[in-house]
Image (tube, rainbow, N blue to C red; front, side, top):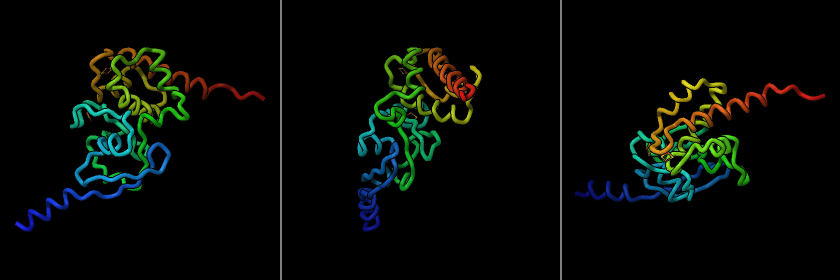
Length: 176
Ligand code: FES
Ligand code: FES
């Protein structure tokens, strides 16, 4: 009986978590069972991260932890103590859309937008690792995300467009 009681008390306990969210040190409180997705949304107010399936299938909740994309519904908030977390809000530095977001806008790569934050975060990580992907590779990467509005074609076009523009920028000769 007393053991049961102590487990209940442990579960209700909230502990302070300090992390770097989108480049700024932030702190918040969570229970040991709280999901990272709920923590960033409800405790830190980063509501750009969406929650769909809550079991790792749809990809809507994708964020970066220490620069690597992952499902925030499959992580506990306590796991990010002292770590760097980036959400979709971090892609628009100084309130200006990043190049990936601008490409999504140009290609109308979203409709309801529910899946978009997660897709953007996966694409941002992917393009760092694979700067010149083929269409097939982009489609394979996107297979980790469920979007029920776009049919994916504009999303693929946006990703290929931003990759091409970045690569053209890298290849431009320096002016003397
Ligand atoms: S809400 Fe995390 S994968 Fe669907
Ligand atoms: S734009 Fe609606 S679910 Fe993807």
